[in-house]
Length: 379
Image (cartoon, rainbow, N blue to C red; front, top):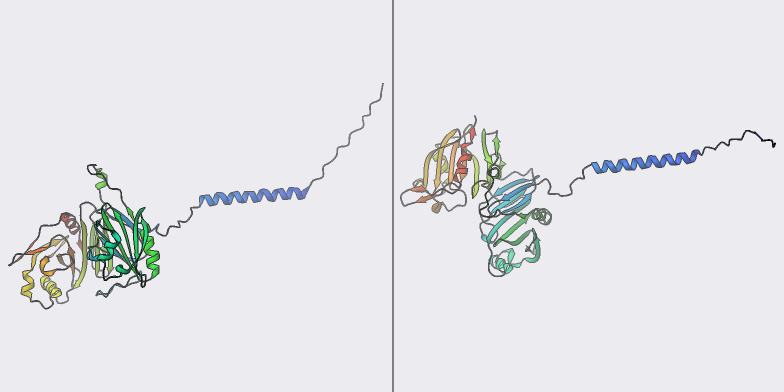
């Protein structure tokens, strides 16, 4: 029988390679950090690069358009007066720096940017030639013309040749010509701020006629406005804009969100240190080389209540005064020796040769009167 060798086998010990383990640990750690950073960045919202993201929005329901405007400026709206080509404007907006103080008297535009929108029926002939002919003797006639696009609609841009501080953008929509005119204090205001505003301009989808609106779409939220310095409070429907232009001037303006038409209600705080009768105070402001007896024939004066206070309502003869401001005025005594003057478009006056009577009221007079009913005056 063959002998079997039972010698215990030798077990070889592996030598540990520490540098290799260290390298692998570093790689794993780096991979973990990279994944963590990737997840963290995916969860962190990317800041918006759109400079207009936080701007306010203006909407016009009559002509169905909307645009945004800066929220970091002092903004003054207007719908009274004439825009480009001496045509009545739909709306104008003036942008001022936040620290700007409005002068008591109009000394010309001294803000950063002014622009207006005018809407006219589309002319039958060539648009650019028509605009230049209408703008004869103005910068428009010699303006540089460029093709442009606004809200995917073809149009034209006219730029002032001399300083480049005037710009007119034209486009055609629903058989109307939209003329958007801008004037800026600098080329930055025209070429940057105005162009950013234009980039937000959109035409709205209109509801087909005969399509009933849901009752919820007709509900309008009302907003409160307070001037604590003079103890004035009132409410107005969302869609209008109330601006404290300066300490004695409040401007409420916009398109009626419920009824057709616009709302124009400038308010001015007058001082009455001599405690004059309200009509005497008013005539003193009006009088300029005209006798009192002549003025009174062209005014319709009645007692009036505005909110929780009483005063007078004055309606001017439109043909006699020939002014662009609203013809209906309320005068209401407020705190101290001050008087609040509220102007509205409710009525204009008609003179029949002996006296002045109110005209037929405008279609959205009920909105004006609802706003007036919300006024509260505190001492």
